Image 1: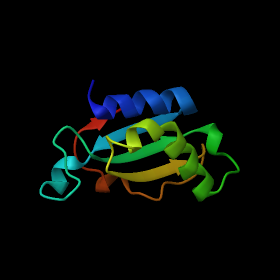
Image 2 (image 1 turned 180 degrees about the horizontal axis):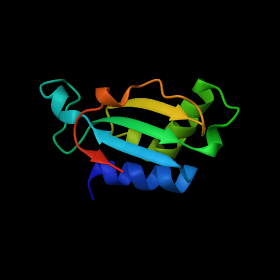
Image 3 (image 1 turned 180 degrees about the vertical axis):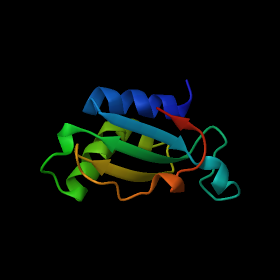
Image 4 (image 1 turned 90 degrees about the vertical axis):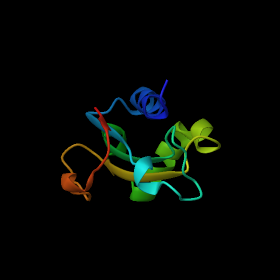
Length: 102
């Protein structure tokens, strides 16, 4: 199973998201110290009721906890756009690059 698929599976189980995008952005980091062709740099867009009333830091901590086993060895970098339903995105969609998994 590809790492992006494992990330998606873990986040779906933890957050029951209304929207989830896991974008493997690893190719744009080729030559970088943490680069891994199997996937190492990911961008995540996640909308979930779980985030309602939580600070940005609290949301990040929840995601890090959900992905803890992968963060130790499989994930080098994460870019997170975490929102509660109805909140506006901080990351314009046109910035996303690489294969998308929805």
